[in-house]
Figure (cartoon, rainbow, N blue to C red):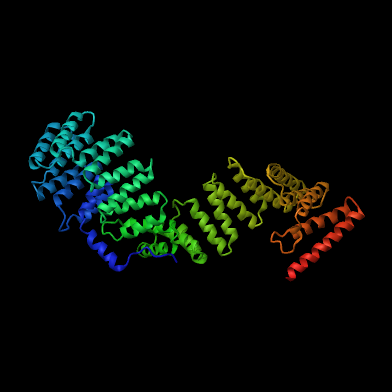
Length: 541
């Protein structure tokens, strides 16, 4: 079993204790990073904590309500904030923002003046006012936005990180991601602990250069090792960049933080699964299911983990519950394919085929799925369907490989050999002959396997009897085999003696019954008996 990512009890206890000092500040960090639902969860959770600055928490809760369009709730929060601390300036900024939305710019200005009187040395307040104007109407209030940003610049000597964050947000709204990232970088330079600058920089740059985005979040985590947002954001970026182990390791730390979200434990189980840490993922999934037995995501993760660890009996039962518990669930192709794998594992091949068919119907452009479905059909002796599925796979390939063509010829061979109609069998075999001939034409080196396949297809096209074309293919196969004496060595791991035996059998049949030639019949009979002796000796060994 892979090394557990869970921290020791001692370390986990230390994390919990220190993380609590972030408290409501984690909620403010999420708000400033634009993650309003997460911010509200934490601000609500910590509102009555002893260390919470309630006036400030009410301000941010009011701002979230305002963003969500609930003006009545917003006003209620701002009023509560003022009731808690009438000298806290921010709730007056919130009331001013409400007045701007209501179209009363004069009343808004009065609220903003009150806020500024209470915070003469707080350069964050004029930035908050500028943002209120920007949110209300960036064109109409451009003059006021510039005015208050200039006040913040003057008061902070151009060092207020919130100035650059707002300017970055404004550039993001125009899709100038490079310019926005530069502004967020300025915020970080002026305040290395400015979490919103790091997070917004990472988000602006991640789709352009993942490493730059990740690097900034790693710097943030070094600055604020107990920040729930820093832990979560970096873990998410690791996940998106396919750094499964780093993502799951950091998530294991993050879920010890009191300010993690309930859904994050489920996310952790998913990360463990994608990181191939199946027993640990299953353990977390079972913990969640013990409290929430019908949890859709965790029911899925449970049977995926069980299938991955080849616990197929349990996987089948878990999969049944998963599908039956959610008749209208948003199931993925992987759900059906994994269920099919589990069914195959317990020998229920026909039911596995059904699941593959559902998956292929949902995702008809998935070439790998069609190829696997073809193999499953073949294993279940549904050779016509196997050929159809492989043909559908082949049609999706922009540049089919020689292996693709050779595989297609094999599907048609199986279908032809197991067809009751001689006419249909010939049609199927002819298709296979066309594909194997393309392989022979394009291959860099001749291969006896190609001619064995060609000979078999000619036989399948001729009611399972050898004809001149089949014999010509087998003659070519024998010529290639004879070029290497090792092919007659019983110890050869390539089973070339079986290829000889097959060719000699059909040569004997052909010269005995169709193109009667006693000398050739005798010649190939002698060769056949020699191969039988060699094969007998090999089996005895």
